Length: 295
Picture 1 (cartoon, rainbow, N blue to C red):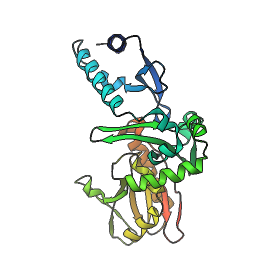
Picture 2 (cartoon, rainbow, N blue to C red; picture 1 turned 90 degrees about the horizontal axis):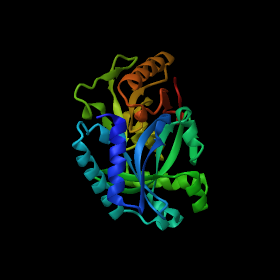
Picture 3 (cartoon, rainbow, N blue to C red; picture 1 turned 180 degrees about the vertical axis):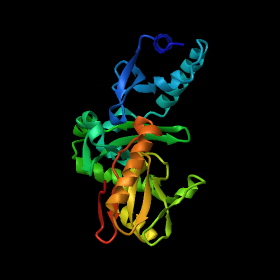
Picture 4 (cartoon, one colour; picture 1 turned 90 degrees about the vertical axis):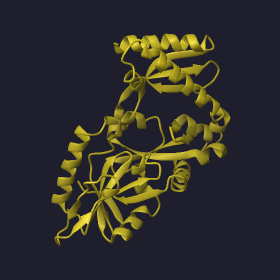
């Protein structure tokens, strides 16, 4: 089934199901790293917020014309569930109600220049800290709302106010987790240090494994990691959801360059574009308590 035929059929059927009180259309929405993807947007007339469903994901499930029935049924079920648990619009617009839901994630600054024009953000090396509202989270996923400049203006707060709330909420609701890489993959190896000893790799993420790379900004996290492993360390941004920690006594330009080349290869062949955080490698100096780009 051709993609164009699929989208036209889904829009027609969903519009019929919802009726004239709703608008159903396809819109390209900006994702991480400047990627634009098609979403089915369902908006109720007179209501500011809208439901957005990824058409590419649903198209992958639709091999035949008859599968459109399954797709539209699932979309309708998802919409009804989200509406049932929807946070009232006035709570989203009210700072005192919304501040307990604010979270953050890290994205690459250069690849997201267009997106960053419309959202409050704080730069960190070649990364940017951006914010979102966690509306609902369960075993099937989570619903979020991006914090943009218009929402910040409605709250009448500054970026720093948002940052402080987001970092506190993340630490409380999605605490960081440092685990040996072997806990994630059975054939994990290690890094051979200058003294010939093999030191293990570690993975740093949060309890939900959602935008877990942001753990490097948790208060005291880098210091705690260094204390636990007993060394300074390289930070490899393996995706927006996690980073790999490699213990090292000091930052070597050669090692940093080799890790950067490996990261670029993985980013170019194994990750979807939306999950890439950066091609840079970072180093945390334990004695100086300093985090910086290594390569």
